[in-house]
Image (cartoon, rainbow, N blue to C red; front, side):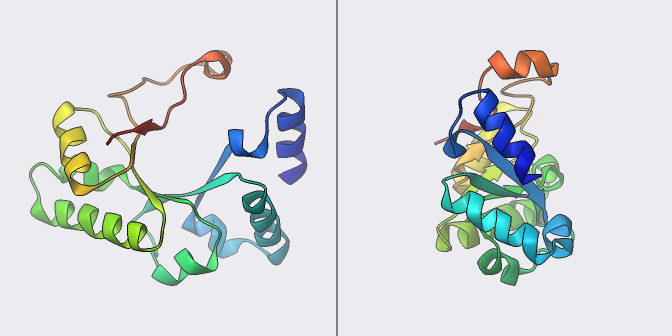
Length: 153
């Protein structure tokens, strides 16, 4: 994985800070020491590392201090229900509070409506991602297209 990242950066004349890595907790849990050391190295070079689908699966808070994570991504499952379910709203607010207390940015996945955007913005999310901002595009358009993480405050 790390040799591929280096080749892509070199081929497109990018720095480590220009590319991000997104991993699920499952991948981090199963990762060996070499993978974790590689992630630490990438992180030390300025690459942002996102923990995807936070709030589902194990969601152990100990992982947040154990792994080099910069961004917590709130799973779209909570975003989908947040307008009608106070429990989903509370979970979003709790994830934001924990993330910010640890110095992490928090991203809301799956934003599709202005109402969802307003809700996660008021909860304190830093970033948003979803159809509200950009529909999926073919890979060749992605290279030239807009950055898909959107600041929402």
